[in-house]
Structures are given as structure tokens and as C-alpha cells.
Amino acid sequence: MKYLSVAIPCYNSQDYMAKAIESCLILKDDIEVIIVDDGSKDNTAHIGDEYVSKYPDTIKCIHQENGGHGEAVNTGLKNATGVYFKVLDSDDWFDQSSLVKVVETLKDLYNHNEMVDMMIANYVYEKPSENKTSVIKYTNALPQNRIFRWYDVKHFYPQQNLLMHSVIYRTQLLRNCNLQLPKHTFYVDNLFVYQPLPYVNTLYYLDIDLYRYFIGREDQSVNEKVMISRIDQQIKVNKMMIDSCNVMNLKSRKLRNYMIKYLTMITTVSTVLLIRSGTEENLAKKDELWAYLKQENLELYKAVKHTLLGACMQMDSKVGQKIITTGYDISRKLFGFN
Image (cartoon, rainbow, N blue to C red; front, top):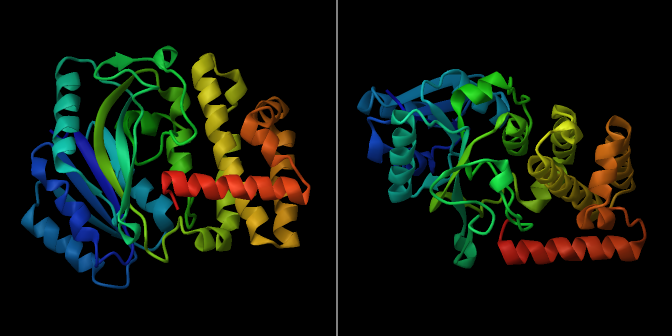
């Protein structure tokens, strides 16, 4: 059986997808690799099919019309047979020794009938243009090497959001929460992590640097200029996160507080990008986004507004906007995320 399904969404990824795929092949018997060719126009499809011919018991390659990153993840999940599910972007890769530890732990939990809903591991920002790496750990916030619940979780620092890079979900949990990412939309990673959280009861954290997240391509979706050009997609995901569940009704106080913090961070990113674009149209979209949150869930709006970030985002003066964007620039330099 396969303990872990790894979906690799690929669109015109011929130049770098091999590194992602090869990083999974240290455990061919226990891992299923699902390459999703999302309507590529280069040699991606051929490369994927070649890997299937070499490793037919480990790799699948699914070809589909272009639907965007979210639809490729949907396809990966639909075809996954592994007990757990992980997304690996085609320009990123796994540290192989860490992957071995992850799969060994998942196997052990399965064999002892102690399957958890979510596994968490560290991730590393790889920024070769600056010869810089930044490791995001959770050692201060999460118990290590044991099953725990939300009430065991401690304080997360601002840079410690659980991202797609750091989480591994139980496959059936993702299906149970009816996760369906929107087509032709960037930034769905946040929805992928956020929407299933209310279904998560048991967690497990390994202090290992599993996911290597490459930053540096000019066309990369997290490039600031690219994000501003796609700001309507960022807002769409932001609103879908608001609508995904009534966070204020969650019984677990720590889960509720974490999801408020996560939503605040994403809304902050949306707000900063809208301000930095410098257009009246986008400043109006900023006000509309906050009005949407207030209209859809007044209690959640008040909770977000009363966080430090939320309070800063409400500054409408030029001085306030300068404070907001300066703080964003400092965060980028400290954590290397953009």
C-alpha cells in the first residue's frame, strides 16, 4: 500500500520538474507520485510519461486541459490512493532524509492504528539569487514527536503560519471536508490549508526540514509585481476563506484563535498589495474587502480588527499606509518570503 500520495502540479515545468520528482523516489514502495500535467505546451507531458514508464508502480501522470494550480491539486486528490496527501510544487523539492523520516512515522502511526489528521514539518525558503535560506520551524508552538490536539498548541509567531509547504493531511479528511479548489486561480494554497482545519482533531509535528521552497523566478506567483497583477485572484481566495466556515463558532479556542490569526495575515497581504499598487481602483477594492468581511461575519470582523495587524490595516491616512507598507518590507527581508 501507499502511505503518502504526493501530487506535483505541472504547467510548462520541463526545466525543473525532474528535481521535484526525483526527490520523492527514495521510497518508491511507500510513496505514490501523481504528476498532473495541467495543459502544458512544452515538454512536460513527455517527461511525465517517461517517468511513468520507468516507475509504473510509483508514478502516475495525468494529462488535463489547463485549469490552473487549484484544479491540478483537485485532480491529484481525486486520484490519490495513499493514506496521506501532500502537494509538491514542480519547482520545489523534498529533503530526502526528512522524507524518509516522515514516511517512517506515518507508517508507524498507521500500523499502531493511531492515524493523525495532520502532520506538520518545517519548510525552507531557498533564495539562491541572494545565497540565502530561511527555515520556518514550529518548535516553540508545537509538541514534538507525539500525537497532540489543539489544546496543546502554544503561541505562533507571525512567520509561523501553517502553509501548504508544511502540512500533510490525511487523504480522507480532505475528501470529507469537500475540498474543491477554484479553477484558474492562483493563491489557492491558503484555502487548501485553511478550509480543512476545523476537521483536524489530532496532529503530529516533526522538527525536520522537509520542504524546500524555491524563490527567485520572475514569473513566480509570489513575486510582488505578479501578485499585484493578479490581485483579484488574491481577493477571491481571501473571500473564500472568510466563507469557508464560521470560525467564531468553533469549540476549540486555540483553533479559533489560530484561524483568526491566519485570516488576518492573508487579509493583511491583500490590503498591503492593494495599497502598494497605488491606484484609486485598488484602494476602493481594499475598502470593499473589509466591508465584505464585516457584512458576512461581523463577529469575525471585530476579532480580526482587534488584532495588532488588523488594527494597522484600518489606518486610512497616508502615514498609516506608510507604516503598513514599511512593516511589510521589513517582514520580507527578515523572513525572505518574497
